[in-house]
Amino acid sequence: METKISILIPVHNKIDLTKKCLLNLHQQIKSFDNKIHYHIIIIDDGSTDLTSQWIQEHYPDVTVLQGDGNLWWSGAVNMGAQFAIKELNSDYVLLWNNDIHAAHDFFTVLADLIDKTDKNIIIGSKIFCDPEFKTVWSMGGNFDPFTGKLNMTGYFKKDRTEWQEPVEADWLPGMGTLIPQAVVEKTGYWDALRFPQYYGDTDFTYRAKLNGFKNMVFPQLKIINDVANSGIKRIDKFSEIFTALTSVKSLHNIKKNILFYKLYAKSNKAYFTLIENYFFFFGGFIKRKIKSVFSRTGIILTILSLLNTL
Image (cartoon, rainbow, N blue to C red; front, side, top):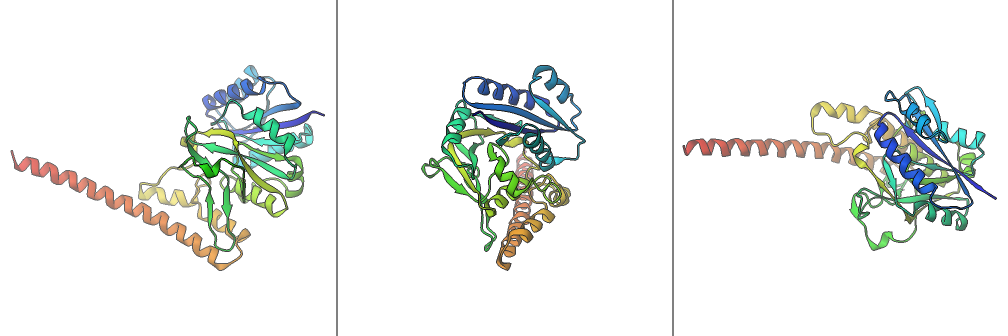
């Protein structure tokens, strides 16, 4: 019996990334014959760079769903997942981004894992942030509801021996993650109202775990993530702090962080960890500003010293 997998790719502009992504996917999907049928679904959330038109012209087999520009990540995934499950009767949805690149054997390995893996398991990928597959970006993440410790395993660290075997995680990121239909039916869809962007993937896969499913990362499933396209970058100006604390695109959004802990924390200690995280956020910013001031001061003193020697 043929297995149906829908690959969900939310996009908003950045057509060049989408072109590379679709080329990579089609080369891999068409390169081998098996019992899996892949259907690519692009959720175009209000792009203004003719993304939809280009896809329909060059990849007519790709389904393009239209958003109004307000879906964000979770809303776009919901739209794609609902179409995949209700209209296509897909057995799985595979979360994808237009800024990731799969290793040459990704879909061969995935097909083998599907044959061997229980359908109560969400299959996660080992995500790298360099083209040589040497620096890890994610091996899944962990959350301790009592201490409040929330982290992503391997974040920007060199690959190591302990990450060569499958590991169970508390949550998985929203790329290279294969989710069985049964998980969505029991867990529900992504929480687009409370977590439209960040925490959307964390919340869904953690909820799935609480509903009795497992999140497993298989290191033989390798993808590369272009981290340059991920959210708001490091804060270096006072004027950027408010944006970092309130923007939907920001991992430091204080409202979303508090909401996640309110939903899943099981002790007051967890909130102290959250406060500590913001202490380090502000402390890191202040430290960079002080270093910048001393650096400029040092340059000025050097120039004055040179002038005095003339």
